[in-house]
Length: 116
Image 1 (cartoon, rainbow, N blue to C red):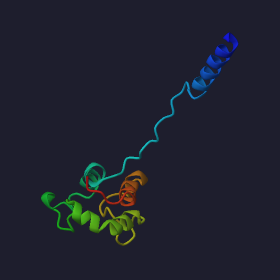
Image 2 (cartoon, one colour):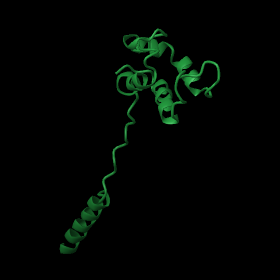
Image 3 (cartoon, helix red, strand yellow):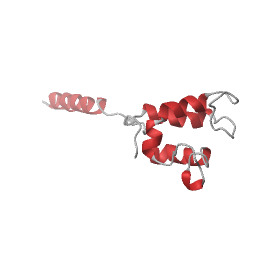
């Protein structure tokens, strides 16, 4: 009888501990999606002013609001990817934006053009 109880206890312990792990599995990381307010708005303020910001004296298509940037995103990406000196290159009075800055616009588009 003691052998059966001992074997049962050992078998139970083996089953319990075989399902335990010393390292907990990390929860699948949920990628943070880019949005206009957090990611894009500050890039535009830093790189598109004053030309596209009316409050700073700009007289080009205003990009100080979500709706205009969202509707023109394909054109914005096209123009900021052009080589400097090419007709239509933006920013007109500056140097080419860094790849990481251009990728902010691309990722925002990929993530669904979220406002917030």
